[in-house]
Length: 427
Image 1 (spheres, rainbow, N blue to C red):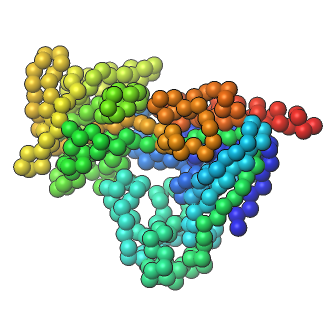
Image 2: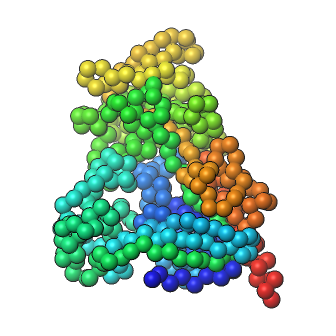
């Protein structure tokens, strides 16, 4: 049984991505007791799946390492992975959360040696790489996973593979008897930092994401470009492994559209400009990038980055929302539409089409365990009716990494204020 000590002066943080980690660390470093709950088997969220940040094109690994070190050094922070808040009752200063813990089947003795993964044979689509590669039934989610502990896929439990994993472990770290647990946790304030998910590109039927293998999403392309990704950083077509030197980026794929997402997701334009630089880095003068856009939105310090990318002769900007994508006999995706500046029709073939999909909240409106104020896009509003529940980062709006961290710091401050009021009332 997992032991967690919590009181009404504890802050519960739901979600262990960049926003949840930031909020939890900021609160814990002021001396508050914090419990951080993450549904995945590791912390870091979608930031861990990025190759580079914009606009500096630096790697997220540095910031992740710093935050991981902070979590390890802080005695006020309790971390629960493979955990989900399935119930929440009460009011500001006096909440009770029900937390369901899924079994990892690997205990704290794990040294991340990898012998269990070598022993098992079953393979599954790797969710970390958005299904672009396979992983074993015993796996470390990614090379910087925190906690650095392997996981057994529930699908192999009860099979010969599970027994092979157990037999291969020299440290007695495989526990096939682990079962789901339920905890009840008292807390005074809740920071909801469940983040975002990419919009389902298969719903945008004219673009053929679910029909043409050489039409992929922006998050999938990010993994392709990563040297630690499914292709070792080679930008190739899923259909045949051919180098993708001519690439189309279609902006607002599902965003700003009454049939899909009404809102602008803010990051998509800059993400595509960043990804255009990946193509230039890979193929230099052979690269050919077409960016199809309604309008490009770069704000604050991003304007300089936009101007720098736009100045490159190998990148062409077409003001247009493409009408459709089809594939020719060789699997080349052809983008159809009208250039709204010259009103010229085009049917342009490419090696690869990348859909800049929008951001939507990871938790649906009807899935919250307690009543909170939610806007039409599904994000949590800052409202007095929410009591001691505060949204952080992309649970509140579509934000980039920098703004998510800033927003999470603000959420931590508001939660601390609630806890301080509880402490004063108990004196």
